[in-house]
Length: 235
Image (tube, rainbow, N blue to C red; front, side):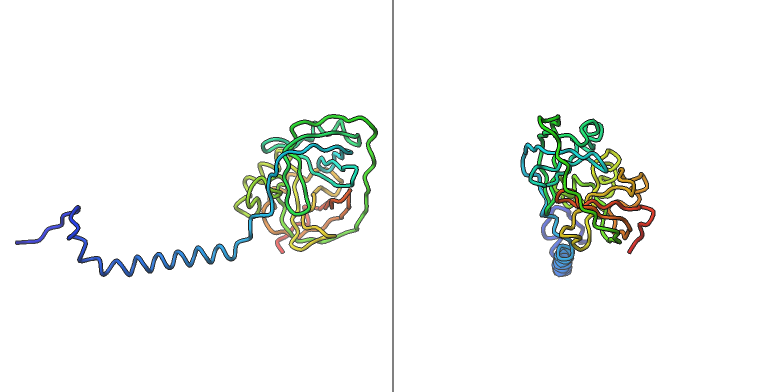
């Protein structure tokens, strides 16, 4: 009698068991080793998080991107809901004392407020401490501030480029993540050489390692990197 294959019969697969078993074991071992290797070489996406809500009060600075410097000298970046900034709301309050309420994102030594409410506060705005730090050539990555400071993980590198560009177009403050600490921090607020928002050309350089020239200024306890995007090159 000629044998024939019965798909639901356990006996039909017994002949291939000895051949397939080592192959399956080898594949599982190889994929497990590959997963472990990728995990080892990948950066830790932690260190940034949304940690509830907070209310702050201080002096608002509108350029190059909105920020509030509190009376204690701590500088907090401001962004809106979704993938949008709050430049339109901040402009009329530039230099004035304000109060704000919103979600709180933090990574490293940098904080961002995802603004729900922003309004003028009683009293005069205090001019924040400013310290020019000269001209620098820095290497790092331009990220959208909201995601890299904790709203998304990892919030940086090429996997995040499309999201970063949408946030940038919407006005979310960009943050330069330096490869090594600069004046005590790796997270620098960015702006153009004229102290305005970065030009559209910055989109070509988002979420990728770049070297560029610019000047640094400490405002409160934050460092602002006013970079010339035309100088950006792959290091």
